[in-house]
Image (tube, rainbow, N blue to C red; front, side, top):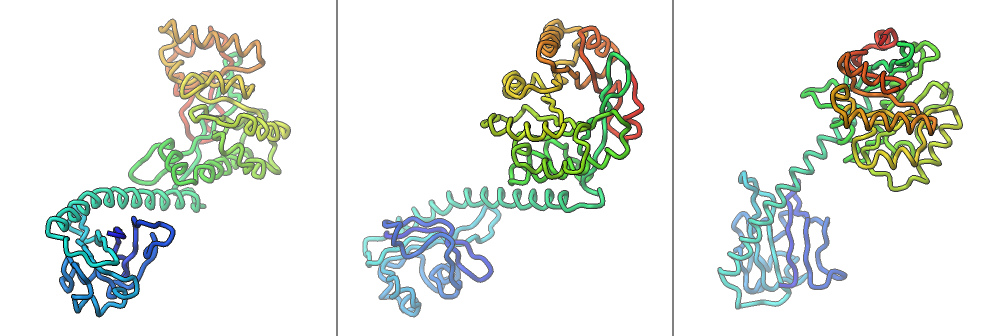
Amino acid sequence: MDVGFISEFVDGERVFRHVDVDDPGSGPVRVGDGDPLEDTYCQRVVDGRLPELIHDAQNVAAAVALSVTSELPVGAHISVPLRLADGRLYGTFCCFSSAADSSLSARDVDIVRMFADVAARYVAEDLRRNAERSAAQDRVTAALDDESGTVMEMVYQPIVDLSSGDVCGVEALARFRSEPYRSPDVWFSEAASIGRGVDLEVTAVRLALTALAGLPEPLYLSVNVSAETVVSAQLDRIFTGVDATRIVLEVTEHAVVDDYDGLTEALGALQARGVRLAVDDAGAGYASLRHILMLNPHFIKLDMSITRDIDSDVARAALAAALVHFGHRTGSRLIAEGVETASELEAVKALGVHAAQGYILGRPGLLADAVTARA
């Protein structure tokens, strides 16, 4: 056969979704093209007005009546319905040649039907992924367009200076209220998967910045961003008119950075405004040490996987001590994340860690509660 294709029936039209032709440059049908169903072989095969197998369309009156028979032309033709597992008609699996072919048989129709059955599984998977993507787009768009705080809101967790016991900053964390509950990392990952990750992060930062008015000086506000968001230049715009010396950017190290030159250039412009930099989740993810070495941060945030049981785990304590020493030599200060017990808190103090945050010091919540926490 000269041409093979899968078509979808959409709103009274036959649309070509997949096409295989002997000569792709001059094929008679192209992916995305469509025509009225009533003018097609496909519809008439499905409803029984044309047989699934046609050896010579010129000998079938119902085929001759269709203008496409002479325009293409169509000689031999095989078409079978393509149905999904639930019985829904998706379209047809077809092939045809411009010349007649008397050698075709029921066996050939069975082969085409087998191909249609296999194709239907892939089509169903494509439809599922498309539906999920559409739903993700709706969810993320709702969060981006929300101005009332009913979808996304910010909560604040205290960061406590371990030498004085006072709060030195707060970290802004996004929370999403939609049902069923989905964690923030799922939301941001989903937004990134549909190309809206930067938009959602920027929206979260913009919401977080509203807390500056109620944040006592000299406390700083820490916000989470990906490297992609930093290089997008959108942060530079939203920091206009803001006291950038009170902003700390927490750049996650979970994502691979391919262009450190571009990232450091973008960070340099922000640091020139007074913004400080923290490497988030150090000790977890892809390459935290390289991230730290390349970015020269003001703060290194020790991941909770390291601080967990640091009071009783020699290896964790040794790694933290090494990073504290590294920080002293490079001018970076260490912040321990996920500190949950009194003994963990005492352990990080003894190691010389500059600051800490975690449930024992204060859970994420209202800004007013965060600024009054103490170690």
